[in-house]
Structure formats: C-alpha cells, structure tokens
Amino acid sequence: MEICPVTLATVGDVVPLFNAYREFYGQPSDLKQAEQFLKERLNKRESVIFLAYLDAQPVGFVQLYPIFSSVAMKKAFILNDLFVTEHARKQGVAQDLIEQCYSYCIQNDARYIGLETATDNVRAQKLYEKLGMKIDDGVFHYIKYW
Image 1 (tube, rainbow, N blue to C red):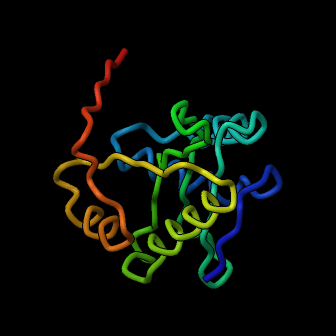
Image 2 (cartoon, one colour):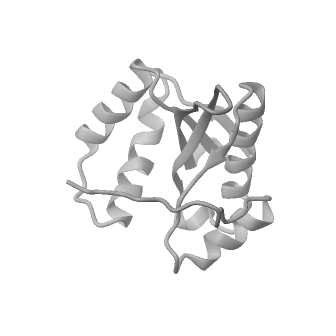
Image 3 (cartoon, one colour):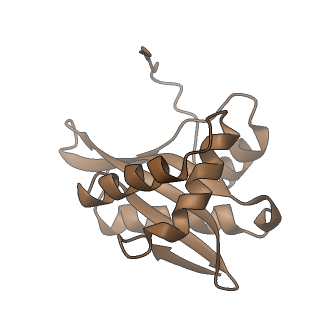
C-alpha cells in the first residue's frame, strides 16, 4: 500500500472516491462539482487530503481540515472525511490513512486531531479506539444547520 498527499496534479485520483463517499451519505452523484470542491480546498490550502493506493489503484482517502486551539495557541485538525472502497476494506487501509494523519499532525505540532462519527457506527468506533482515540465526555458539541 502507498499513501500519498493529494496535489492539484493528482486530485483526479480522489474525485471518484470523494463522490462515492458523498453518495454513501445520501448525496447525488456530481463528479464535476466534487472535483471543483476538492480543487478549491487545495488551492486555498483549506484541507489536507491523503490518498491510499493498492496495486497502483486509488482505494481510500482521508481529508483533514485545519482549525486552531486558542488556549494552546496551536493548530489542530478535524478528520472530516474517511472513505475506503468496498473491495479494499478489512485490509488496513483506513488504519494506515488515520496513522498518516497522526504523523502529519505531529510533524505540524498540532494540539489535537478530532472527529465525529454516528453513534451507531460501531465498526468505525472500534477502529478509532484501537488507534488511541477516546470519546471526549468533558464537553458538549452544539450545532445549528442551515
């Protein structure tokens, strides 16, 4: 397996996976808009994307969004998107992608990496816990959707 940062030159490799990820969450397929969205994130340096290849084929990706911790006066990251194609699951792809994120965060002196997942996504929760993540029960997260 090879994990590489996505650049504007390689963004085309991640677009079908990003589109499939969105479809998984009930969104309509839109490859053109997906590519535009990802290019904009990369152009503006608003996200970091890592892409996993098995046998030179893209099979999974993870996307980090930077935020900041005012208290620690450091950068932090939200692991916002993680997706592995069905045929590549249970081969360690998701684990390797998350570990790549950990390495990136450490190299960039980040305060923390956080994520959210559905309460019924038990399989993902087990992976996150296996990799040392813990539920932060010391805070409430509030959200308002538009």
